[in-house]
Length: 245
Ligand SMILES: Nc1ncnc2c1ncn2[C@@H]1O[C@H](COP(=O)(O)OP(=O)(O)OP(=O)(O)O)[C@@H](O)[C@H]1O
Ligand SMILES: [Mg+2]
Image 1 (cartoon, rainbow, N blue to C red):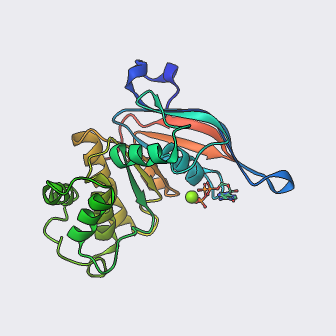
Image 2: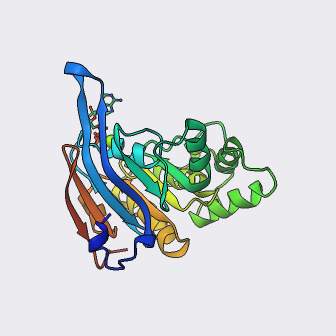
């Protein structure tokens, strides 16, 4: 999150993700809405970063651009030093399938499939060769503490458990970057904390980098860096030297 010169570890090579001068305008003429204006940020590898800001401040718009689901009107995004803005849409999906995992507020699991089938199906639609998919799906479910319940369908699981299955689906292909838009918004604080502990484990023990958005002030204490968006611009950036998890 921090600008390079403020990065205590200093080295530019440690930046996993960089956004340079991102602007995003929706619509045109009188109806044009500037959702992001000149956003610069650097996310160091191995960090857990929260984006906060009031509704409409541009959080989802920024996540969509960082994950190459959307293209900025101006500016560049670099993942491991390689520009992802400007790739063709086929190149962008190929890059996402390898390097990025996505988690959403509403879990997005398929109701008729078990937890295991949801994760395995995720690997299949991403085009991963079938060999090893079972092991990869089970490994991901074990990582989020859901292997014992993997035969259950989503409706037989709590919200927190469903979100953990959705995280397993997002990490089964072992991406380096996990992007989560309000992953705890539909959970009570206890289940939200479980999800945050899973994220912390992924950052500390699986070498992942996580960017999430949230409205929950409690979550700001759990992450490494907090970036506040204000009307499409970065208002402040803070670092937690001793996150609570
Ligand atoms: N596809 C779109 N077309 C037009 N305007 C859009 C579109 N997507 C977002 N916007 C506008 O861009 C601005 C930023 O929206 P965004 O969804 O990024 O906010 P947010 O911070 O994620 O809000 P929330 O906390 O409610 O999720 C808003 O003014 C929104 O109305
Ligand atoms: Mg949003």
